[in-house]
Image 1: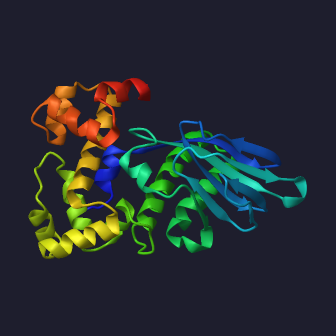
Image 2 (image 1 turned 60 degrees about the horizontal axis):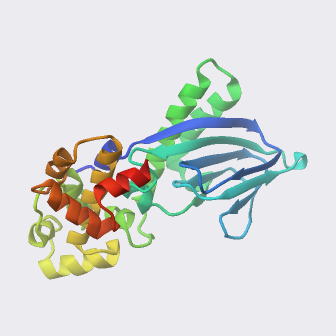
Image 3 (image 1 turned 180 degrees about the vertical axis):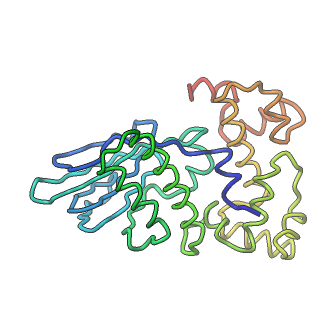
Length: 273
């Protein structure tokens, strides 16, 4: 069972390349923007100020990943020989969707620490600096592939904070999560999910809560509401959304939606717009 493909079917990533080449000066990104960012330091040095965290000096090839809008600043002067390739990122369903929300505020990874991205990075840098026709379209697709490979890298790691990604990285929980992702409308019981994880009901419930940070049924509610939010953004009728995500009626979905978000679907949609 594929832990990642269903997530990306619902919450695919779209990239837009906006810089490639030498970098000198200051670039500031406000947290009010409706997108995340990827910056690739190909050569030289750059100073990164992420949010309210201390400034970082980066002086070897590095991937800087902001999955959601977050204020940050990049600085370099002529002496640093900085070469950057940058893209904006948007996830289907908005920056608050289940996948984007499960990721850290930002990641700073040396390229040598993520060798599985090596061939994609080499292709992306070649496109960035060779000047072939259609380069930006190719680079956009390569950035999207890069994010997918980065997500694959993250769910192969076990040293994560509680949340969806930690659950997907856990061999015993990943199948239960994938089942909920694949069939959100099904009335899953904890016993059924525990059987899929090959654990006792009590052991599974405790393990799930510790790793994911929610009970299994609370997680199912969160997943359903995230899917409903995406469909509301797309303009789908509330009655059809209710059926797709496992509720008998629009009013039942509205009650669950309000319990999770504090708003009715109509209020949330108006605010999101």
